Image 1 (cartoon, helix red, strand yellow):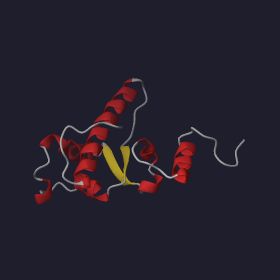
Image 2: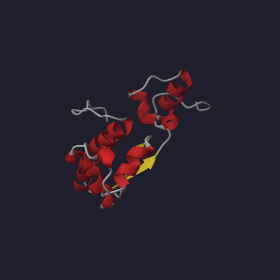
Image 3: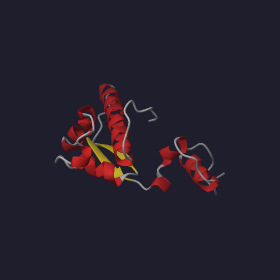
Image 4: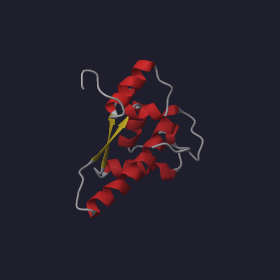
Length: 125
């Protein structure tokens, strides 16, 4: 999900952590709708390319580097601890959502458009 962050991040880990929190809120909302429609969902898997942000969601202990992060952004920790959400590492080169957020080489763009179903996979007719 693309959204301009309302707070200033002082590191890429913090920026990804906040973005993962927003993604978690949206995913939980979608899970709620699907459940109401009769399609219950298991644990939500969220792919992230920042291992530091993933570590922050899984470690509930206080860190000096995170004391300035607004308390509202720690929502994701609660959801991870409850087992509703699990963040998994996905290398940047294969994180398909990056097609919307980064400048890509021709090969990466082609790879992502194929996997999004926007272009025909090589070898298929």
